[in-house]
Image 1: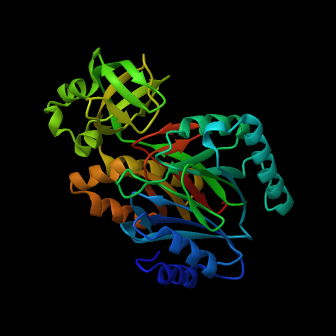
Image 2: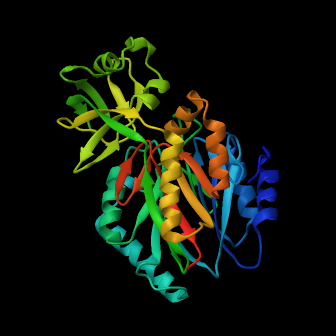
Amino acid sequence: MTEATDPDAAAQDLARQLLHPHLGCVLFFCSAEYPLDKLATALDQHFGGVMLLGCTTAGEISAAGYGRGCISAVGLDLRTFAVDCTLIRALDSFSLVEAQQAVERMLGHCRQVNLAPVKDHTFALTMLDGLSSREELVLNTLSAALGSIPHFGGSAGDDNHLSHTHVYYQGRFLTGAAVVVMVNTWLDFEVFTTHHLKPTESKLVVTDADSSTRTVLELNAEPAAEEYARLVGVPVDELSGKHFALDALAVRIRDQFYVRSIQRVNPDRSLTFYCAVDTGIVLTAMTPGELLPNLRLRFEQLRQRLGEPVLILGCDCFLRRMESELRGEDQRMSEFLAANRVIGFNTYGEQFNGMHINQTFTGVAFAFPR
């Protein structure tokens, strides 16, 4: 990781830490505060010839734990990881044929490298423009093409400005795009997701919504912001990110609850969400459980199945980080992430096996075969 603010110094610092003869790929997660054009040029210059993939964040996770205004990165050794990637430039028109062709091409590369069999040794990672509102479309299509290959990822952030989020591919930061990364490895791994939120008895029915913009106009036939404010017990004008983090809403799919986080209150008292919403869905009010104990339990379950992880790549919703800060638990959380070798970023949404979700910790844990 680097906290250097000058783009050239930052790229040089990362290259000093990561470059070695067997470096095959670098995944990086950077603050949107950097001058991205200059950073792209500097990274390309200092990592010439190495596959470099990344995105902007709403906070970074490095070997030192939580960070802000910095760059966190991890290098993948080509003797252990076979990596290929695809850029999706036109998210609106991404088709199943394109997805199948991209998946087959990337799998072909993994087979050619021949580090490990494709089955049970391959997963996909996605990084998407977090303000594109196209995650569901892309993930549904990609999931159909991936079949049984596990998949996770995160939506790029921009330090909570909600202005421009970027992915990085072949020397450029891009908006309105997504990067799909196929990884094949002989290491044991598990793709996972977890959240600490528990359902309550309170329900809100979406009675009017614009699904194309993820905007809910009415809840229970009342202006959406007014009904949500009534639920959480505050005036509409006082609604803020604090309430969205601590008073989440979720949709139930079979026996699981998947959070649909609110992004903002609009002047017309509608609510814009980070995830797909549509007229007729029922949203359940959720109450926070214990954030750190939940993550500790999940990591212990991973440890029991895999052994001691050598690395966890993590996509941690920025609202979880906000909640830990509001509760004064952010330092403990940061230390826990560092102690468990987590590298990643705070996201505007998480992806897990074709689903776009919020307020989760989603990732992949690696361990040496027993």
